[in-house]
Length: 462
Ligand code: ARG
Image 1 (tube, rainbow, N blue to C red):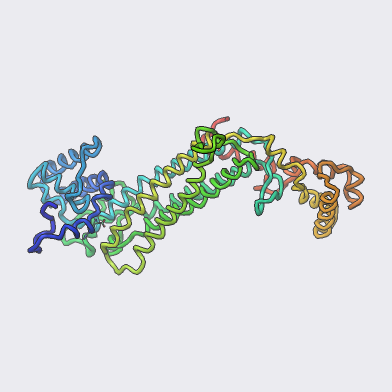
Image 2 (tube, protein in one colour):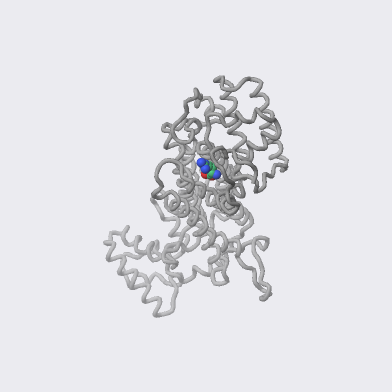
């Protein structure tokens, strides 16, 4: 390893083993563009307050911009010679511009620098993830719109409960995803805080203009307490908890796709371009994408637990433990981005199978609640209506009959309140249409919501 920026008080070399163990360069290189961006703002400020001359600023700025170009063109590869990305950038700057580089770190510690880099990184990625969430929502809304008339069994305990519109079911996911997005938006408020000026922990004796740096970097606020500024990783924990919840949501969606794609259900056909085959069983078209998304929620939970555990019981202020925040955060960002993107692709090409859905619903008695409600509307107490309808189901099961086959006389033998109108309820679709409450699966309600989402997401007509 090259000469260390902190070697002044050391009279012996670091053990290579320690260098390898303590280095973060193998993973924090990912922060390089943010590190350079932060440094560019920092030196502008140093010049503004007179801590460096205009000539020095020009040199440092041009050197940093050169590094930025090297990063963009993929030429910047600091390798394992440096402890971390902050030192690697500074060393590269010195190679390019010479002595002026020694002023870059004025009034700054790697403790506030790394906090800044992490915030810049996350700010960008949160926007990215929110865009992908929206794309997934948009594709689901399109499927809902295309199949807007399709009635499916609504499930509880994975048993047919009551008929619902498929669109209603899909819009439940769209709602979940919109909460995910708004959680991230909220998290962004606490990411959006500029820590520089905190130094190692106590602030600086130099007349740094923190607000100016915040303005240059587009931050809304400046960290209020210098100790908190370098110790705080709440913003990352918050992000990871939001990511874990998104993982839960995607895993539920993925599980349903696996089940719905099965031969037993056959509610959907996942496009073959989103399935994989078996090297042994020639007939297979497996829902591996959904299975992997289901599994990757585990990685997201793992990242959250990693960071919670790293931060738990850490005394103030910065501790090297905090270097362990990065891989968990990076992995969560990558996992989320890939899962959201692949799911959006899967939904773009999915096809529903109305015939299989109809077949599955035949004789499922999922109209029972609607029949009971019909009696209630005629003045029957709900408990009584529930009992009567339950008996009707039991009778049908005994006689191997479906609700759909019942005649009016048979209905009336269970309750005189059943009349012609009750016959209509025996169709699954009628039960859906009868719903009156806001937020229900009633077609008018679902269409209202569907149209609102289409407008919001720009999901077009098909
Ligand atoms: N690589 C370190 C990290 O990621 C940067 C800050 C190190 N500060 C220190 N005093 N060793 O947290």
